[in-house]
Length: 640
Image (cartoon, rainbow, N blue to C red; front, side):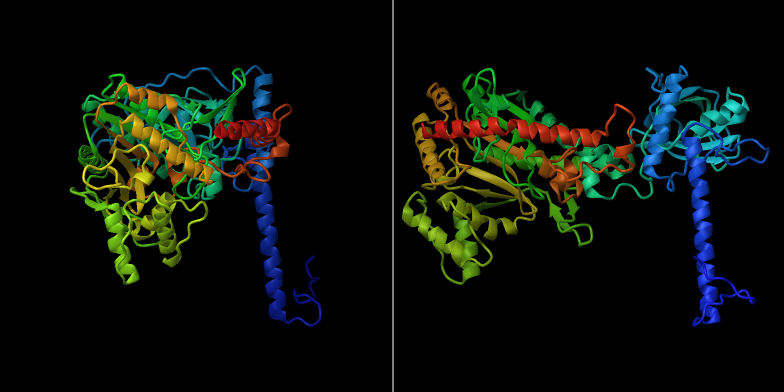
């Protein structure tokens, strides 16, 4: 819709100056050139993606040039459609786009480690030692018809491939056809010789290059990466492909678990496994997930903690046991909570909570030093844009007795002497705690306002906020600790501690209650809280009490959250960053897929995200009636 030019080369439209008309014409010309360039690039890439050369540029010698693999201007749905057609055509012609096997002599990381040291191979030279390597091709750069550069990535390492027609087993036509068919994201296998480019970059000079698995969808650019956190968490495979830092996080997570396991194994602990589904959700004060066993027609609960089973093993004579595994709690999702998470619990006969505090200091400080190389770490508690805080894991760690420490901090904050009753099982004590919560600015405790919940809110506000460096909050009241043993010198308290760092709980431990009569009384007290509306109160487990009748030796029990510990050691401030597949709210339009084209799926193969979403919805609809019935059974069971 350009303006018609006049005799002097400018537009004849009235009311516009000659300068303005020239500016508009120039803008239109530039826009037209960009559109033509984009169309030409799309045609060339589409031709290469479909395996043909009709849309390719011409090389200097008149033959088709090799596509550089730049697909940014190609429509994702068209790209996916053409790539699927390439695979289908290859199958129809008797080809095998997905071969069964490719022999690998070196991983990419092993290749780099063996041949990168100085002096192994000089710039511009190559060794006469054949290697075979496989990985994902993340970049492609072509130079005419005789030279192609690839970047191959695998096992967290990257190396260059220089495909040269002179060293290839193929003639020129087949060489061009092969490399025109490769696209970014393909998994390829290379058999060739180690060497260095003229600029000195470690490379493989292939005699054979083979596509092992074609990438049908457009891969995100390595420079841009995957920034959308929703895509990163829902499609973690894309995150791992292009964001190297994500891989490092999960290597550290595995190292954390390895360090815990090594520490306990060296002290003669036995690793065990306990049931994931139980008839009673015991072992922790938490709201459980409910499921149903069809064959037995029985309501079951996903475990909230393995504690009771592990203590039964100690009763049976396994004096030192531990378990590292998943727990499930039907509670809120936030930056430090996920419905399923990983914990380690261990139980040690003839130990008390003093022994466990010493072991905790030793285990975690040693772990931090081994992973970070120092006892002090820098942690961006408020995000990468804010200054970091320093957390010092050097021993010894601070220890605060809960109630006396709370009195001290509240006295400072409120400007008057605060004294909290030690016996918190009375109505008067509960009413006093409720008044203290009401007097505290920006603090609220929603119903039910039990003494345990009120005290927990106060401690979180006044004490936990002080715990940047590792700190033990200890000597919890009995109303908060139904499974802990009474304190030897502090009436109404228990021998329990919680470890906090960066103001968040990392570990929980206590001298175990082993008196079956007192244990039954504690369970009954918890049932009163449940009757008052506390969904997290612990139900009575008569089977566990029966095991205590046979005698549990003096025992110390300990539990630690692996996810939060990993967050500290990887400088991440949301738990989703340290879980490979965190819980996510469903998207209205199905899972977001970079480069996905739902409408362009081949016949008989609906998009994975759409089919998964439909299956999830259908499953939820089909299970509603069963869940209703389960809820009624649960109400009936608790009533009985």
